[in-house]
Image (cartoon, rainbow, N blue to C red; front, side, top):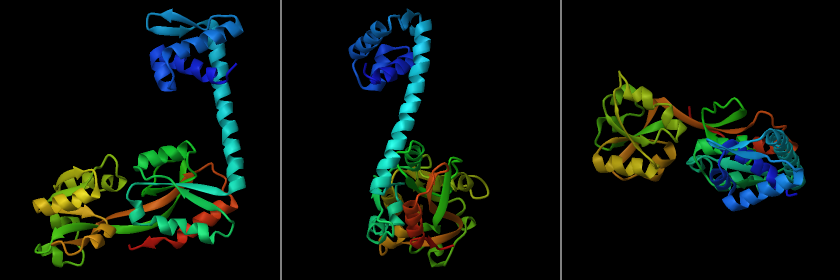
Length: 296
């Protein structure tokens, strides 16, 4: 008997549909039906029956389904232990990085750990993706650590701050605000602002509602990428909200970046609260702490 059939039973019980379960399992409905039929032949009783809302478990099926769920849980725990042992042998650390944070910590700086690790450990970097995907990977143990935008609010994680800075107001060189060393939100009340999409960027979520409401009453225009913030601001003569690295990268374009005293951003390295830190984990966290930068 192929152990995958237990996953098939759970999926079919949860969806009540051969086609939907097969889609989730990446197999054909006929292949799923054949696997269930072979299991029924093996145990000698029917596990599913047709109902008004699709297929449903029989009384025998409920027994098998509970066993299947337990088997799946134990199988995942077993694989977690195997993965832990494999990582112990290889001393490999996987790091997921939220979109844009390589501007604060370069790949080269992070991978520099591989050359100076005191424990012989190595870090591997995953592809960048928004915070919620990095958090999901961390929760599912698809990575060991994640570099996330602050604040890290998930109660399942512990985090160590590594970076804090003011956001910058991207303004035309001839704007009265361009001559200031710093500005406050009150200085650009009522302005048209271009900023990153709030649903994917924690840094935007921190200030969007505040700026849209009195006493600031700004008009916010959301875009998907930081390059759009810069380009649309310059094209429309609007203001933008950008981080320090992008200000430094786009000097001499008729716009300047001015620090916003009352809007900050930052990032932290996070890991699961239930993770038992190994000596190479601690080695890696200590290394990241040497890269930390705090401007405010």
